[in-house]
Structures are given as C-alpha cells and as structure tokens.
Image (cartoon, rainbow, N blue to C red):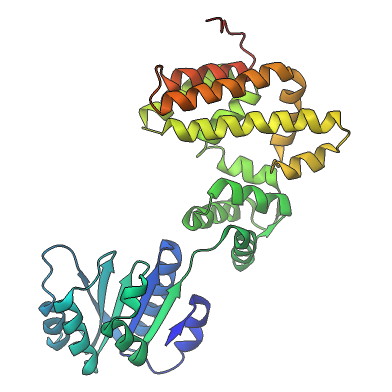
Length: 339
C-alpha cells in the first residue's frame, strides 16, 4: 500500500505490517517518517533494532540470517535496511522476494531508500512490498508549496509568522527543508510567543549568514567595505563557486535598477519590493543604495558581471577579482576601471 507521509500516523494504529518502505529525496521528511515508525514499533514491543547498510561488499544473504537469528535482548526487533541510492541486483531482488514470501513474525523490516525510478517500481520486490506492507512515498516540496509548508511547521511549534517573514525564510532556505526546520526552531527559541516579522528572521540568521553570499550583498548595499573584503576572502577560502557569488551580486544590481526605474515611473516602493522579493530591513538598505548609486554606475556593474561570467567560463582574468571590484563599487568605492 502506497501512502503519503501525513497518512502514516493513522496507519500505525493498526497491527504492524511485516515491512515498511520509506523512499524519497527529502532527508528531513524521510527521517521524520522513520522516527515515527520506530517510536510506534518500540511502543508495541519491537525494542531491538539492527541496521544493515547495502554498501559495496554487502552480502544480501545476511538479511535472511539476521531475520532468523534469535535475539539475546528482545523477542521482537526492527531490521533496518538502508539502500541509499543503490538498487538491488538480481540476487538481492531474489533474497528480498524470499524474505517477503515468509516474513518473520517477530521482525519488522524497515527499508529506507532514495527516490526510486520507474524500473525499480516495476520490480518484483517492490510489488511484493506494496502488497504485503506499507510504502511511504515522499515527494519534494515544490517552490509554490513552500510558504504553506513553513506556515504549517511554524504552527506546529506555536509560532506565528507574518507574511513577509514567511517569504524571507523561503528565499533564505532555497528549498532546504532541514535548514527551514532549524531556522524555525531557532526563531521559537528567540521569540517564543511573539509574532515573527521579517526583521526578526533577518536578526536570527545574521550570525550564520555573516560570511555567506547574502551577507556579501547586504554588506555592499550598506557600504561596509572592509566586511565586503572579508566575506569575499572567506568565500574563496571555503571553495564557494564564483558562479554563486555572481548570481547573488547580479541579482542585487538588477533589484537596484528595478527600484530606480519603478520609483521614476511612480510605482509605490512597497510594490516594487514585493515584486523583487525584498523584505524587512533590506527594504530601507535597498532604497538608500538606489538613491546613492547612479544608474550609469549600475549598468556598468552589470556589464562587469558579464565580464566575470566570461572569466568563469574560461576567458582571461580572475572572476573573483572582477566580482570584488563590482562589490566594492556597489559599496561606494570609486574604482579606476580604465583599460
């Protein structure tokens, strides 16, 4: 039987199935589903757990030996089979099929796997699990679903997030659900019982982002020259791809151009910020930078971003040096760009 993660709790009120499979690419949701399964099985007497990793050299016969072995510590146990990204070969498929034909009454088999392809789902062993057990299929949380997912998680721990705070979190975590959970836990620790604003989110992530890509663009629009240099140095030392830095810097320049052009057309500033996904304190920082920087200067920066892109792709020159110059120019440093 195939189910969604949110259906698992209701299925656990029934007699334990001989086999469960949790599969997908979202690490957080996989581990949470497995934790829920382990807790329930422990509560009904499956107090021992043996974990098998199907790494190179793993002998699949050991699964049958493990199932038939008498436990010295408990009458019932969980056999946890971690497939990871590997696919059972012909011999492994046959052993899994044998196990599922006569599953041991005192054991529950928990199989944990990455997302399975169409061929794996057509295999005999997968069909046997589907017939005799429960398969929890975990699908990625799509970008348009992320605000709802964050809001739901926040409510579960008693947090009330303002809309701007939700949007800022979505932007910061970039689809990393584990990072989202960690940020929500941190916010709950810092601001329990309060309504969480975008500024609170920015304050809570400031320590972890002090030397990251977001910290670089924020330092630039706030004219923090020494901090810009420090962040670029740290990014280079940590092996950050120049492509990632280029994306963040060019995105910030385009946002500044959008603010200038929007205000010139009479568009309300808040409307521009919403369109450009700018929240909290960054709104004032961006407005100040847009007022400070000349439009021609911003166009020149975009042109230099194209130059950095060419250098990343193999043209002569150091892309990090070019990106440093663009960042310092954004921070208000007058550079001699004559060739």
